[in-house]
Image (cartoon, rainbow, N blue to C red; front, side):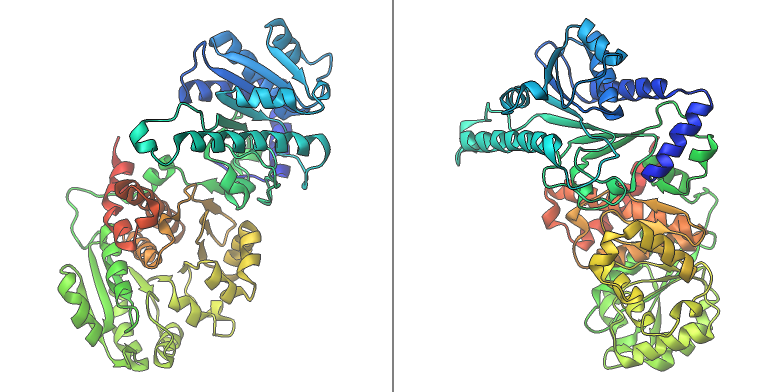
Length: 540
């Protein structure tokens, strides 16, 4: 699954047309793909009422093809609301007319009364109004149409809530429909598919089927909050088409994540599954030691050694039976500067080294890290949390890092590394991740919804999972340990990072499902779900 800007999508369409797949056939394929998706997603019968919002461009053409296909393959009652008249030569519109589909022109509905009736009466709304090429902010008829639709949706939700009342658990389910199911074709109307900007009146979809490739804006907030469940259809374009094949931005989907899993031969032993050292902890952040260390083990590493101050090890070791321990000298509950000698002596015997979780900012620890990076030849390095903050204090710090280092900043840490604001980071996540990975020669995991993983050679992968279950302290330690554990098993830096980020997000979803609420998830819950997340990928 690829991700492409609007310019690249247009180039792919043109190349496909030149190769013999006409624009007309691509539109037919898009509409039929959406029709098939809806039939699989929803039970459609003679009582099902589907309202299609049809725009003037190709997005509207996709919607017409979909409507015609549903009209011939189901008993659903289909109505079309057209933003602007379609051309007389439009064969898809003529087919809709010959099928007797109800057609309402916006020009004949100046007060929006007919549109309101179609929205309120619908079980399903298909959004084929504006497509991917619009500019914001919306104006004129498009803006007023979207506003009318959203006003209706809000009124329906409020009416359903009012009818349920405070005793709904005793009086039974409401008979008032909260809102229809909404499917967006290519993207929800009212978003910029390159930047992720969203109009005030954007139609929030339950599902979006995007054509040819995903678009960056579908994975960038605020637009990403309106996409719902995302599916991508290539609409008949061969994955070997050069213009599509050469795209370096991908979605980490279950199939890709499964393919990245490191092998687990039955004849294996702890030596071939890798050795990971975790350098973590200070007196204020004791839990980070346990979270990161156990996550490295849960990733499948054969041996995990935790290096921390002797006093912290005494506190944590009783609850962690599996790791081996490397006691380090401390100053005021933090790792002492001279402890770098101990780590340097041991590091060459390991396949991966995680540095930073809960280290704190004591001057002795900062000196420890500076000395470690300056003097050591380190194994596959993962730097997280306070390690990133200390790193950012060094002049031209990226020159001190070994090849294939993995950095895992959240937007605040990324702001400190770049000198930009967190808001600026989030506005241009794709561009900044790609540019910084290349400049710093690192694999960069820019955390957040949606998490991006960028490599120095221009490859970028996006995690298609968004959940607030991961918005709690300690989940970053779990992610860092998970990535280090995969790195220790021999995966390259880019694959370790994107597989780790996917499994971490999946575990967050599963933890929320297990508890019944995302708001109650804590880092330990995510950690406990890693095994089930891996199992889901491993299951045939």
